[in-house]
Length: 102
Image (cartoon, rainbow, N blue to C red; front, top):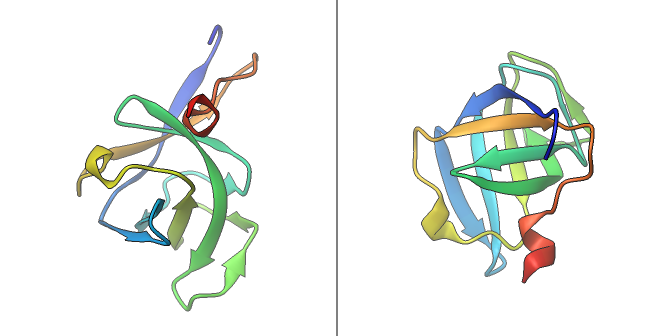
């Protein structure tokens, strides 16, 4: 993961598990995020698989200041806590996603 830069995307204000292995993390964005972006939470990388705004509309992109729910596939609920940082990772090399390691 050479030359990567991490920016605070949001603090987890709430999270919940859906469909058995998927997690939704909620919070207010500090940076713009798009579906497909890579995020780092508690040392693990995830791909943003989907997002909803505060009125539950599915969105592809959200701007800083927006309150959103971010869908993370195949995530273990034990890796999340309220207050954890969600970091947006902009890497120049391809990263290994935690979902592909299973």
